[in-house]
Length: 85
Image 1: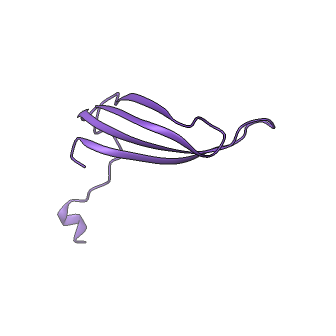
Image 2: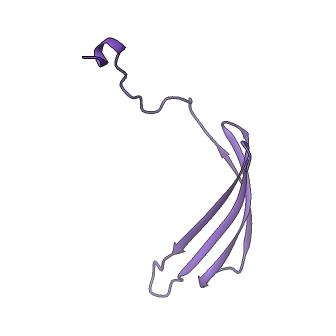
């Protein structure tokens, strides 16, 4: 949608963990707003498409990135003179 606002959709399956447990196929539709590169707010709704489960539910959330940024995997770079060999 925009650089800060995006949509989220999910389709997921809830399997039975016990003999009398519940099965369900659920979907989520949500909006996420990135306040800063390390902080995002989201809100959305969930509904059950098949099986047992709530007819709908609403949620709000907050995601925070902890730790330093840019400390992921680094790729090895060759100097131009070594790459030509």
